[in-house]
Amino acid sequence: MEKKEIHGVVFDMDGLMFDSERIVKYSWDVAGERMGYGKLGDNIFHTLGFNVDKRKRHFKDKYGEDFPFGQFRDEYRKAFWEYEEKNGLPAKKGLHELLDVLAQRGIPMAVATSSSHEYAKNNLKREGITAYFTAVITGSMVSEAKPSPEIYLKACEALKVSPAHALALEDSYNGIRSAHKAGMITIMIPDLLKDSSPVDQLLDGKMESLLAVARWIENC
Image (cartoon, rainbow, N blue to C red):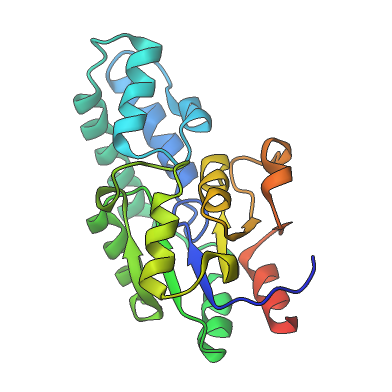
């Protein structure tokens, strides 16, 4: 991957900073079975990067307008927190190393996640990394969810950097599309989605971990 002039970095959160998407998939399976729908976890492959409204629309389109999404949401949140309380929510490989490399270089950082503000803030606080981030832009702060570029444009604005010189780190197709539409440098670090071919033409690079990104930044 060629060297780029990077003035800011924007991180997606779930599946990128934290190994949370696997737990979400598990919690959807648990919730689905508790509600009599069977395992619903595979729906995550079709909703990565969605905010809650778009996810609700997906489930109602697939299972009918009477699908009790509110109950499902309550059930999967309960299953998620039960799992997290017992097993923790691990950070992805290289997260801390990358944050340190960027901080040492004075490169400002932001988070752009479709998740709720409270959930995002709690994750950062628990991991002890809140101070690294100038801004945390969440789903409730934008009118249009990914793949709209709105969330990434807001993040760049908060960092006071041009999108052309801002790096977006993503694991989902919709996240990549969002960052590309915003005019950013885009790197995909695959998580549940291993195949990057649907967005290869939008990527500036693809790396196996955040640690690889840290090493690349060190050599820029």
